[in-house]
Image 1 (tube, rainbow, N blue to C red):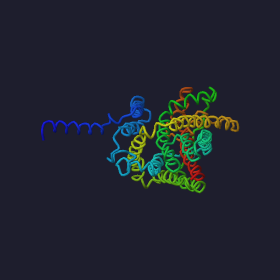
Image 2: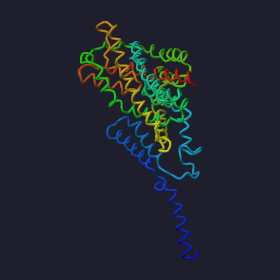
Image 3: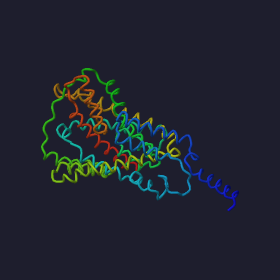
Image 4: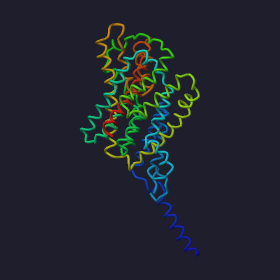
Length: 387
């Protein structure tokens, strides 16, 4: 090969190589999403906003927005047969969320709810955010199944949002999942202003009776009865509720400690990594940066605020019918969403701010775990009606 031919060959191949690089294929949208991913990492690392969620999702956003030439290389998340596509099937087929619920059940103590069952009503009231957002989404032009998947963001339950959107609105799953997990991480930012706005100083210093001691027998019976009651009522919620209560039975039975440790430790950690990284990678600029995504983020914020407000206002209303000494502190109303245990911690933090000796955490855990059950039941109701 002559020198001229060699230079021509080298130039031609170098030009071809450059067409495969991210620099050649990048668009403004890719850089916008990369900035979003970096922002998520900043929130997780600098401010410790749900780092277990935001670091995998933020880094996944970076992975998903490395631009490349579509030449059958099978490297993209949406390319059939690629490694990322195979891992993403846990999201798209909806089998990561039940496994997350298995781990949640194995790490959750339902004692606060068992000792004071009326706290279940607060968890139910907070689900108003889901159905409120559903109705608003319908008026904005979304189809009923899409509106239902968007509305579930109000439950502040990422796995449930993914499960429902995988069944009803798979084309919107990326925006719904990122929105749900974003607002879960922003619980310390979003909820306190709503709680302060809707409560008086007198409300914030209400002292509640200490929860009664719950026997081990009650703890063992609860997941069995809980499964039968909820799933006979809403069979479509079985994948989530079934594994939630099964995980809790593993914990409370006292004879399956190894299984419970695996469910709440290595298993949930592994699934959280895979779910976070693939959900983040699903936000490719070409698929994600749409007007629908912006509407979803707006509706998600609104539904989360409405759910928080509904929980707080329900407690204030409920207190009208309770005798003095039995009243509930409205600051635990925010915990009706299922962001466990972050929303319960916010109840505790605000309670201590107004009375340094008033500990609300154990009380707030009642509606908090009720919210987990409530959001799964709400998802089952919507799935049953719309699938």
